[in-house]
Amino acid sequence: MIDPKKIEQIARQVHESMPKGIREFGEDVEKKIRQVLQSQLSRLDLVSREEFDVQTQVLLRTREKLTALEQRLTELESRGASTTAATPAATATPASATPVTAEPVTPPPAIPPVDNIDKQD
Figure (cartoon, rainbow, N blue to C red):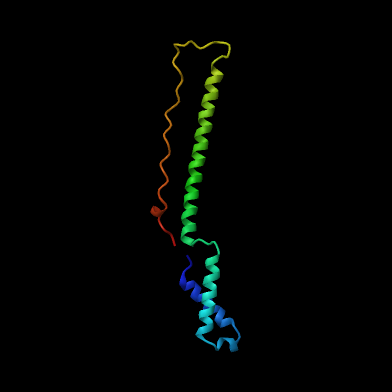
């Protein structure tokens, strides 16, 4: 979850910022600070930076796909509107007429698993 080196660094900074009298207790105070920090941080609902970056990339790809699908839907709707406008409403279409078929819609590729995303530092 949180890098132990970061907790160690924060504990050291807190220890160094304490008054000299308390600081003289030495490692015991620093250990206690480290324990309190770790327990309080574990109670928070936090994600690592790496997980956050991965989810950001997944969200961006999802938004791109959504935009592409919205454009495709608009295009298909406009085609449908233009074909219905070209056919007069008063004229009945004979049963032997060939129905208008749209291009086959291929589903977008599946989103790759989160583990396959390149990790960036």
